[in-house]
Image 1 (tube, helix red, strand yellow):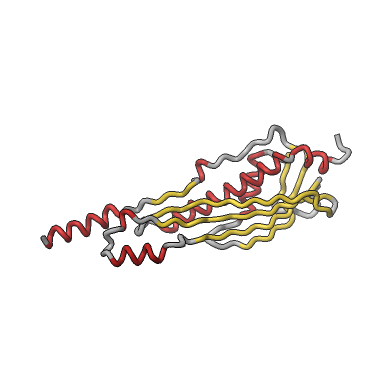
Image 2 (cartoon, one colour; image 1 turned 180 degrees about the horizontal axis):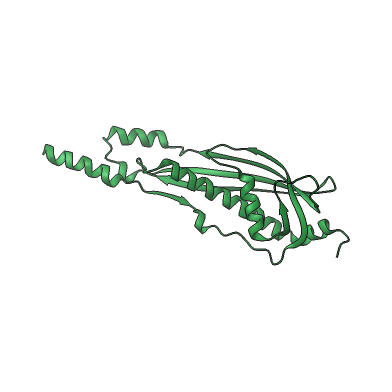
Amino acid sequence: MKLIRVALFFSVLLFAGCATSVKPNVASIAIPKAPAPIPVTVGISQVEQKLNGGFSDLALSVKKSLDESQVFKTIYYPVRPGDPLDGEIKLELSSKMKMDGAWFPKAFLTGFFMLLPSPFIEYHHRYQAECTLGVIKGGQTLKTYSVTSSVTATHKLWMDSPEALEANATQAAAKLMASQVAQELINDRAFLERELRGNAR
C-alpha cells in the first residue's frame, strides 16, 4: 500500500504538468493593413512609459505595428533634429500584470491535500498594456486615441520556465495593443490625411 501511495504521489507530480498557455497568443494576433499609406512623414517625438509586469519598451511595439500596417508613408523613431515631419506622435504607455485573484486559496488547497489537486488547478494571470496616442501638427493635438489590451496567461503549479510564460504573455499583450492602435488610425484615415496634408495634393 505504501508503494502505491508513493507511485501515486510521483504520478501526480508528473501529470500536474508544465502546461501553459497565453490567449490570445502572439501568432494569432494580426496587424491590420491600411488600404494605402497616408503620404506623410510623422515622427514619434514624445514617449512616456510606466512599465510593470515584465514588459519592455512598448514604443517599439507601436512603431513596428505602424510600419507593418502602412498607415503612414514614413515613421521616424527616434526623431532626430532636422527630420522633415508633417506631424508628430505622442505616446503615453503603461503596463501591468494582475495575478489570479484566487491564487492564495488555490495554493493553500493544493498544499493541504498533498499536491493531489495539482493536475486540476490552474492559475490565470492577466497581462495588460495601455496606450494613449496623440497626433500633433504645428504644436496642436489633432486627435487622441486610447486602447487597452489584455491577455490571459494560464499555468499549473509547476512550469518549465516561468520566464518564458511571462515573455510570451507580455509580447502578446504588446502586439495586441499595438494592433489596436493601428486599427484606430486606419479607421480615421480620411481625417488624418486631411489634417496632416493640409493643402498638399
